[in-house]
Length: 474
Image 1 (tube, rainbow, N blue to C red):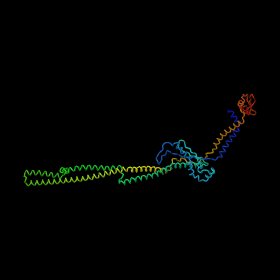
Image 2 (spheres, one colour; image 1 turned 90 degrees about the vertical axis):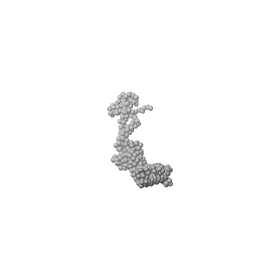
Image 3 (cartoon, rainbow, N blue to C red; image 1 turned 135 degrees about the vertical axis):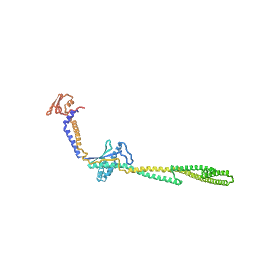
């Protein structure tokens, strides 16, 4: 069928097309008027993955990943969020909800599960393109209900997100608290073992610095003993040669007496040469010399005795230093031995303390995280009751029904045409008979000589008008 044939069929059966068109539009408009009105309210959220963690101090870099945004969408659509809406709105306490559940399911299953499914059917969650904003849309029979439940789903998502963040922190906090108590007991046991070992050995497990102090004292005593031994070795020689000892030589009294003896001997020689040996002055001079020499010898003997006393004191000091050196050596050896034996206990205490400090740090961090009141999602705009219903849209439905009515009307006309086939154009006569057309005569009462407008076609086999077309053989 070509275009002219198609137009002739539509023009011949225009009443069928018009009837179907009007019926389709009327049904669509009638159904739109009968259907209950539905309202849609939208709330928007900002999911921020880049905000630094105030507890851990970690900052995220880069844009939110698609997987992260898809996870948030799935959380919003999850049963847990819908159950949180049921809890927040106290829907299970509404007798009407239970009556509707009993009527719809005959009491089968759970009322909460049925209600959750009903809430999820009216929910629509969409992320914005290339941003971290999520739109939460809810459809309900009234504008107030749509806005209320859109905001309820938004708040339920915030509550669930916070719980998903806080609950693991609480579990970790409980775990670290238990572990901290165990590690603290370990520290106390290790410290008790170390203290018992120190009491048993009668020493303190010193640090390396304290051992260095004791070793320095040992070295100092050893140096003092060596110096004193050298002094005592020189003192023996001085005692054997007291007259030439340095103490005697350096004594001012001995020097003065020696000078007096020298002067007295010089005067004696002068008097002897001048007066003779038996002169009273010569005899007096000799007595003076003898007296001075006696005083000199007495002073030298006193100084020599003092040198011996000093030597005796030094030798006693040497004995004391030697004893102190042995005591200090024994102390250092004992301290080193005790430290080597107690090093394991000391390391146990240090390791237990480090483990306890590390767990205590994590415990404090987990405790702070478990007390946080802010998730990574924030309310951008709350839903407000819409003024116009979202459905049904009468104008849109009427336009769609018009297009559908035209298509159905044309289809109905073509269907009738195929069930009651007519020859409507000159071309169809020539095509069906396989003969040329000599001329076209106007049909009586027709509209002139226009082909297809009530015409008669003359062919070599006769005259054909608007008669049923002959059937073609297969």
